[in-house]
Length: 337
Ligand code: AQP
Figure 1 (cartoon, rainbow, N blue to C red):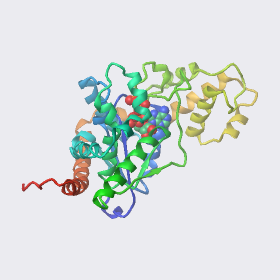
Figure 2 (figure 1 turned 90 degrees about the vertical axis):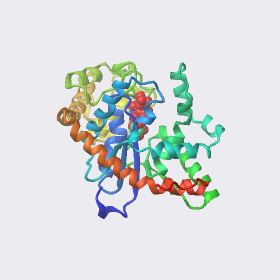
Figure 3 (figure 1 turned 135 degrees about the vertical axis):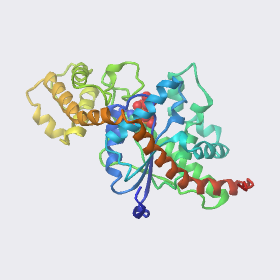
Figure 4 (figure 1 turned 60 degrees about the vertical axis):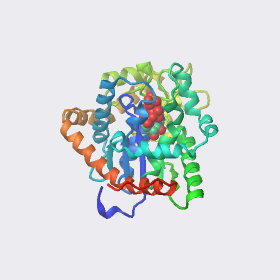
């Protein structure tokens, strides 16, 4: 991160290496991150600590974490402008999370809808980490004196909790934490599954036809869009009860920059088949350069690791002061070495 950007507001955002990023991750988060780094001090983390709240295969997690770094770089995250690091490389996240968990109520965590959803989906592994996930997320944010956190609708509740924890702690110990505000991007899309448009598109979906991975090839992307679940109407228009078409229109709009009226006009008199093919081709064109860049970057592990170690050093430096202050406030004796 450039030194002369010190007075810019700080943005923190994380992404879990739980699989190859999807079009949902891209349109809902990464594409905005790329733009934010021009105007803010951005800190982006591949949050591997969060990922193990759901059982992961160790070798696969290592690969996915490195691939996630390569994909973020391929998508335009610039290590000259932003801090990019792996969460487990800065132990301050786990340390602050413990302290904050002692300032978070059981009842608050019980109300988190993501916990309810994920414990239903992973009924055989409802572990304590899944329950305290939002506390770790609060630590991620509060460590860096974050001013703004880009959030999708799904993360609003967690950010609200992070704000409550910060305010509670500040209420007891004085002004320790910056209370973060949500950052609502100008264009923010919630991308739904192509196989079940009532459900969010997710990288860990067992049905591979539900999501577009950023590494899917052109033919696969077009095939998945052709198969996308729609309705029995034939007219391309945005309307209630047409969640499949609405989702495809949002995706097309997000990728092409055209608004819904222009899209409806473009497909006047044409059927769903033409529309799906066009959306598929448009997405394939947009993702092609990312896939090409990824192919180069992912082979260069030394480069990926050098970006991450530089990022982690920066992150550790930034967070050390917050953690020391917290330790002092709660009454820990300062270590002498
Ligand atoms: N479908 C989506 N539409 C819009 N935004 C999305 N995001 C995720 N899916 C969509 C945004 O991507 C960022 C990183 O998400 P994450 O990987 O940390 O966690 P997630 O939201 O749980 O993403 P997935 O793909 O659904 O992961 P799994 O399958 O592991 O649970 C966040 O800003 C999120 O809003």
